Length: 129
Image 1 (tube, rainbow, N blue to C red):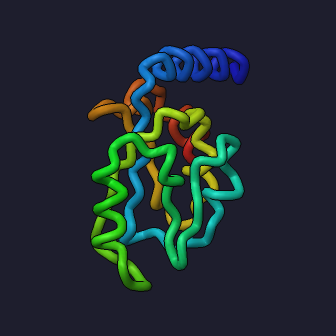
Image 2 (cartoon, one colour):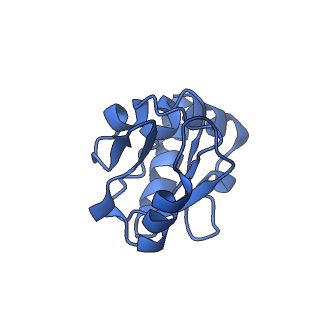
C-alpha cells in the first residue's frame, strides 16, 4: 500500500512540476524567522533577512513581491501580510513546508493547489514529513 501511495504522489508531482509555475506563499503573521526553510531547501532558494525568511531575490520572478516585502516587512514580530513569490526554481519537494515550525509556508500553482489532488492520508503524510 505504501508503494502505491508513493507512486501516486510521484506521478502527481511530476505532472505539476512540468507547469513551471510554483509560487511560495509565506504568511508573515506566522513566520518567526527560524531559518528552518533555509537549511531544509535542497534548491537553496531561501535566505534569512534579519528576523524573516524569504526566497533569494534572483530566484523570484515577480519582482513586485520583493518590493512589497521591503515596504511591508519592516518590524519584528507578527505582521498580518502574506506574500506570494513566483519561484520557478523551486524543486516542489515541500521540505520547507515540513521544516517550518510555524507552518508559515505553502506552495501554490497559479490558483491551483496540488494538495487538492491527493488523498486525505497522503495530504497528512506530506504535510507532516
